[in-house]
Amino acid sequence: MSACGRAGRGGGLTLENSGPVSHGKTVSLAVSPTDPGTFAVTGWPGPGPLHANGGNEEIWLTADAGETWVNATLNLRAAIAPAARARPSALAFVPLQPYTSGLLCGTTAGVFVSIVRTSAEGTAEVSPWTRLGEYDGGFPLVLVGDLVYNLLQDTVTAATLGRGAWVLEQASKVIGAVDRNHLRSSRAAGGRRAAALRGE
Image (cartoon, one colour):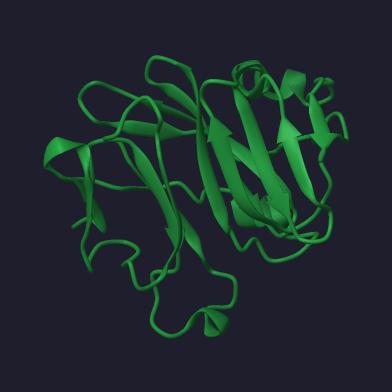
């Protein structure tokens, strides 16, 4: 599959009008702050304008600077279905350890997180999506239009529609807890996590 973006010389990103989501239909693009060859894009691959796509946006991930792509949408639509259509509108990476990051996605029903594991060879594995704040009730079910990760402060800021901006402090620790819960499988489903979220 051809790419919609490639890492250019000198670390720049060159967008091309091809691949799973062309730049004419891209909603959001996020580049890993620790690996410029790993980035994710959300948009819709089918023909027609945004209002005609029926909420079928997808999330695509590359770990080899756009040579190959993985559909990272997985269970996102099903996880959101009771509330609304997914409409993934914002993406951000939170690095956890070498070759492991949390990929955050802003949707019509809050922020969801998936754990992304990459390799030096450029392969990528993506875990199922979990709503951030699902166990602690810390983040509202609201449309999130933008996500920004601050590597120096280890914070994620989420811009919402109607609920202001929310800041997730110690983001790598909170997202790391999501990763540990995925590793524990279904036994962690009833657990509680403390997410240091505050409304701004």
